[in-house]
Amino acid sequence: MKASSIHLLINYSVRDDKSADNEAMIKNLIGHFRNSLTEGISHMVYKTGKRNYTHICYFSSELICDQVTNLPVFTQFLDNLERIADQEPIVADIEQMGYYIG
Image (tube, rainbow, N blue to C red; front, side):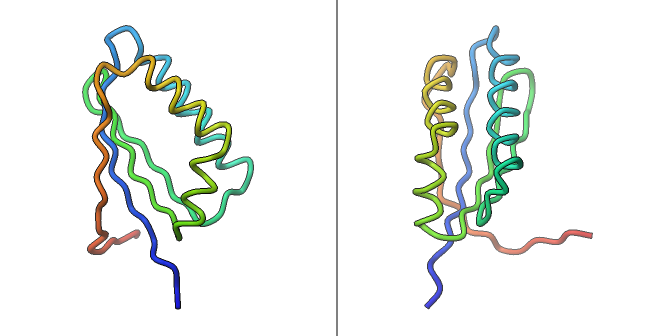
Protein backbone atom coordinates (compact mmCIF):
# COMPACT_ATOMS: atom_id res chain seq x y z
CA MET A 1 0.00 0.00 0.00
CA LYS A 2 1.40 3.39 -1.01
CA ALA A 3 1.69 6.05 1.66
CA SER A 4 -0.56 9.06 1.14
CA SER A 5 1.05 12.13 -0.34
CA ILE A 6 0.61 15.56 1.22
CA HIS A 7 -0.10 18.76 -0.71
CA LEU A 8 -0.09 22.11 1.10
CA LEU A 9 -0.85 25.67 0.08
CA ILE A 10 0.66 28.31 2.37
CA ASN A 11 -0.11 32.02 2.06
CA TYR A 12 1.42 34.83 4.07
CA SER A 13 2.58 38.41 3.87
CA VAL A 14 5.61 40.03 5.42
CA ARG A 15 6.06 43.49 6.88
CA ASP A 16 6.79 46.21 4.30
CA ASP A 17 10.51 46.34 5.05
CA LYS A 18 11.05 42.55 5.13
CA SER A 19 10.44 41.36 1.55
CA ALA A 20 14.17 41.23 0.75
CA ASP A 21 14.81 39.23 3.93
CA ASN A 22 12.04 36.78 3.06
CA GLU A 23 13.31 36.33 -0.49
CA ALA A 24 16.81 35.57 0.83
CA MET A 25 15.30 33.02 3.23
CA ILE A 26 13.35 31.39 0.38
CA LYS A 27 16.46 31.18 -1.82
CA ASN A 28 18.38 29.58 1.06
CA LEU A 29 15.64 27.00 1.67
CA ILE A 30 15.19 26.09 -2.00
CA GLY A 31 18.97 26.04 -2.48
CA HIS A 32 19.28 23.56 0.36
CA PHE A 33 16.68 21.30 -1.24
CA ARG A 34 18.51 21.46 -4.58
CA ASN A 35 21.99 20.92 -3.14
CA SER A 36 20.99 18.03 -0.89
CA LEU A 37 19.09 16.27 -3.69
CA THR A 38 16.06 16.02 -1.43
CA GLU A 39 13.75 13.41 -2.98
CA GLY A 40 10.04 13.04 -2.49
CA ILE A 41 9.29 16.76 -2.28
CA SER A 42 8.33 19.62 -4.53
CA HIS A 43 8.35 23.17 -3.22
CA MET A 44 7.37 26.17 -5.34
CA VAL A 45 7.07 29.76 -4.19
CA TYR A 46 5.22 32.60 -5.89
CA LYS A 47 5.14 36.29 -5.02
CA THR A 48 2.12 38.51 -5.56
CA GLY A 49 2.44 42.21 -5.06
CA LYS A 50 5.32 43.53 -2.99
CA ARG A 51 5.03 41.37 0.11
CA ASN A 52 2.61 38.46 -0.37
CA TYR A 53 3.93 34.93 -0.85
CA THR A 54 2.39 31.58 -1.73
CA HIS A 55 4.18 28.27 -1.21
CA ILE A 56 2.90 25.11 -2.90
CA CYS A 57 4.41 22.06 -1.24
CA TYR A 58 4.23 18.39 -2.14
CA PHE A 59 5.54 15.58 0.05
CA SER A 60 5.39 12.01 -1.25
CA SER A 61 4.52 10.67 2.22
CA GLU A 62 3.91 11.72 5.79
CA LEU A 63 7.35 10.36 6.69
CA ILE A 64 9.03 12.59 4.07
CA CYS A 65 6.98 15.56 5.28
CA ASP A 66 8.11 14.96 8.87
CA GLN A 67 11.75 14.55 7.82
CA VAL A 68 11.78 17.73 5.72
CA THR A 69 9.91 19.90 8.22
CA ASN A 70 12.35 18.86 10.95
CA LEU A 71 15.46 19.80 8.95
CA PRO A 72 17.40 22.63 10.64
CA VAL A 73 17.15 24.77 7.48
CA PHE A 74 13.35 24.37 7.51
CA THR A 75 12.90 25.09 11.22
CA GLN A 76 15.18 28.13 10.87
CA PHE A 77 13.02 29.36 7.96
CA LEU A 78 9.89 29.05 10.11
CA ASP A 79 11.53 30.79 13.09
CA ASN A 80 12.62 33.69 10.90
CA LEU A 81 9.25 33.86 9.17
CA GLU A 82 7.54 34.21 12.53
CA ARG A 83 9.71 37.27 13.14
CA ILE A 84 8.99 39.03 9.81
CA ALA A 85 5.42 37.99 8.90
CA ASP A 86 2.75 40.57 9.56
CA GLN A 87 0.21 37.87 10.44
CA GLU A 88 -0.01 34.12 10.93
CA PRO A 89 0.45 32.16 7.65
CA ILE A 90 -2.69 30.51 6.28
CA VAL A 91 -2.07 26.81 5.60
CA ALA A 92 -4.50 24.65 3.64
CA ASP A 93 -4.41 21.00 2.67
CA ILE A 94 -5.05 20.85 -1.06
CA GLU A 95 -5.85 18.06 -3.47
CA GLN A 96 -4.22 17.98 -6.87
CA MET A 97 -6.84 17.54 -9.57
CA GLY A 98 -4.42 17.37 -12.50
CA TYR A 99 -1.42 19.02 -14.06
CA TYR A 100 0.27 19.44 -17.38
CA ILE A 101 3.93 20.12 -18.09
CA GLY A 102 4.68 20.73 -21.75
